Image (tube, rainbow, N blue to C red; front, side):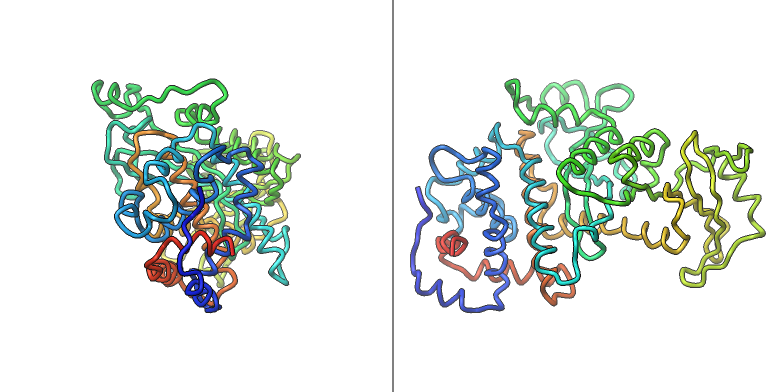
Length: 435
């Protein structure tokens, strides 16, 4: 079955508008060769509407802020033959390796940026960031759902923790990999009653199903899963120089595992979580709190960032680290900036760690414009597919923004959504993608 084609001449006139954001977005999907990627990963369907067309439709739905059901009530429902159920089946497919698809698309986006930018190179993508975000859900029957602690609202909410690995060159931030986590709590009930836990959806999966590995990740330690994601990214050709992490991830065992990747190819920059952690300085064992007290009177002034600091080189259980004891103006509290790169100056370490904020922006934009976490399907396959679609859509828009003069993400998303909705005969969209 093929997409319906009508009013092709009108479509050609629409394509003549070189400033059309909609046209650029749809053409970028084709430039990234998503269809070829699906075939290479053996995710293409044997019959019916192709996986490529279904995937592109789902991305268009997402950009327009519409669910599959809402799209079926409008002209979007006529994009391809077969009705809305084929989209639901596609999201729940057992042989869809969404992780490999996201990795492949991200590699294509990076290659495109490097190719089209005169002053860009692969070495610019030297900052990897790992952080998590809360995805709230409304149904207790969703597969694997538990109550997780939300650091924003300071309370437990029903949903997942989305642990994400992203890569940035300081200008564009791209999600590479992610894992969904649940929190079982001390009673192993995940904050649910026995009835609620028993009523959660369970999908029978065969051996070799790619979703099985992601189910085991849900109850695994986030630090262990993060190491697996980093190793997978390194194996796929991503070579970050620095890993930027929130202080929650800062522990010796995690950082030492990161340093093993690529024979020490990745350095860590983070804030120290617990100032009671002890280091060896000049042959003496001292806690970070003791070091702050000792150096209170010999701080250096940093006018650029309006703070005072002192550098301390130390040994942390056999691992050399550089500590920057920092105190901001009019504050009595200390922050300890830690890095495994013994060559970093304070300003360089400070500016490097600032790049970590990019992943917070990524989460915010994905939730605001692409409804990240909005999927309420009871099947974990659909939940994984939904997050992947959001991140692929974000990556394509990030590529569009990279080569445009848009000042904000909001303006860019509004223009894309407006242009898409202006196409009242949506059957034209897939032929346009092919053109």
